[in-house]
Every structure is written in structure tokens, then in C-alpha cells.
Amino acid sequence: MTGAPRVVHAYGDRVTVSERATGVELFAYVYRPEAAWEAPRPYLHPVRTLAGAVVTDYRPHDHRWHKGLSLTASHLSGANLWGGNTYVHGQGYRRLPERVGSMRHAGFEEVSAAGGRALIAERLTWHPYDGELWAEEERRIEVHDVHPDSGCWALTWTSGITNRRAEPLRFGSPTTAGRELAGYTGLFWRGPRAFRAGRVIGPEGEGPALMGRQAPWLAYCGEHDGMDGHATLVFAHAPENDHSGAGGTHPAHWFVRNDPFAAVAASWSFFEELALAPGDTLRRRYRVVVADGVWQREDVLAYLESHPW
Image 1 (cartoon, rainbow, N blue to C red):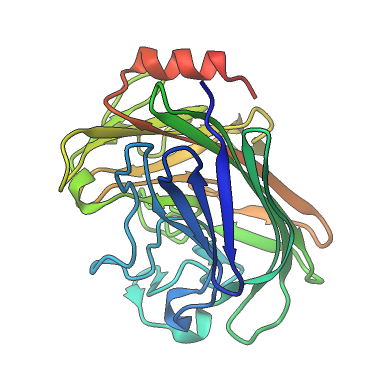
Image 2 (image 1 turned 60 degrees about the vertical axis):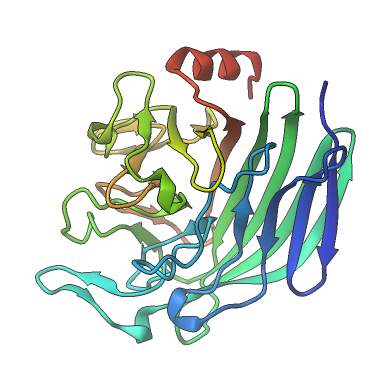
């Protein structure tokens, strides 16, 4: 049996997507502006399993700018659209508010639910601290394959980011700026505090050793506080997510941690910068599967095979 999503739009604040039969809120897409120091940008939180367990964190005390599931750009032509302190090689993390920018909601093209799917289609603009227009983004978040019987649902996140500057936009990360194994940027998930020390699984291998590795998918399994049981999140790249760098064409380098907190990022510029020419568009498509229970590698592989792109 396939569930039916329901959409409620609180104008100027958020779009909430629920499973119609059970009433479980799958996520809230919050687009109202927040604190400038935290690099305002739309985000998904709380994200829930079909059993109602929360699998995202929001403004944790260690990183107030970590907000659920969101698209970020930690180092962008000298600007910080990630939030908080900025990494400077040789100086560490510094409080540089003049580098912190924002991603602003410009309007919705569509917010709808029909035929077992829900869609949020949005236009956004990207800005450095002074408010200059650097990029325009077209974003689609689609909820689909809601399976109450098997306890999982999926969303597909598609973004097209067009450079509106007269010079290249350079996407980087703390690692491209000199910090080892800190390639966080791109689509970023912050897990709840209880998910610390969770299990990280890839197509080959598992654990923190997957940091910086290339793979088409990665899964994270954690145990809940407050209610019994576990949840598994699967992060997957669409086949077209590749770019050529010094190491050749690759689908991703994953940023992943299970200590001191749970986090996964599909990094588009882990080890080297990605330059986007004026007028060009960077396109990325990702899938996130949210499942109740513990999934093994064979469960992930079976799901991905039965739910092709």
C-alpha cells in the first residue's frame, strides 16, 4: 500500500507535509528568514519517520547554524553561506560576520499534493553579506514512495544554481581552504543527538573511514531517545551528479561523522574547488530515504534496485 501525502502551507513561514491516513508530519519546510549570523536559508525540520520519530536536529548547542536538512555553501568565493565561524587557513575558525551570507526565498512555483506525491517547487536567490545577487536557484523537493506497510518514505531534492556574477563562482570547503577532512558543503543533514555513534554503511565498507570516500550512496542508522527503536536514512546521488576534477569523474565525496555528532553531506567540493562560470548552472539531484528500523547493506541495495531513478 502506498500512502498519500498532505500539504499545508502557512504563508510566510513553512510548508508541512504529512501522511494523510495517519496524520504523521513527515517534515516541515521552513523558509522564513532566521538569524543573520546563522546564514539564513530554508531547511527541513523536524523530519520524521512514518512511526513519528524525529531524525533531524535544529540549532544544536555546538553548531547553532546546523538546521535539519538543508543546502549549504560553506566556502563560496570568499563568502560563508553555511553560517557561524569561517575557517581561515593558519588561523582556524574565526568570527567574521562580514563573510556570512544568505539564501533567500523568492517565491513558490508550485506547492501541491496529488497521486501519492507531494511537490514543493521554489525559487531562491543567493547573496553575500552585502546583499549583492550572486546566484539564482530553482529547487524541487518531491515526496514519493510513501510505504506505511514497510515503514519508509523518500524525498528527491533537485537544485539548479545559476551564477549571476560577472566572474566565476568558486564552491569550496574548509578542506579546500586547508583543514583536513572537513569537506562539508552541499546537501547537509544533521542528525539528532541520540544518533551519535550510529552505524555508517556504504556500498563497500562502513564506519567513519567512509569520510571523504566516493560512492553513489551512504546510509546512517541510529537509535532514538524517548521512544524504542531505530531509524535508517539513505542518501543517494542521481546518476547525473558528477563533475570532472583532478581525480576524474565522480558522483560524490561524502562528508560523514558519527562522533561527536551525526552528520552527512553530499559534498560537491570536498578536496578541490568547483568553479561555475558566469551564466552557467550547477545541477544536482539527491534522494533521501527515511526508514523505521535497522537496515543492513542488502536492505539498502534491494530498495535502490526496486526504486530506480
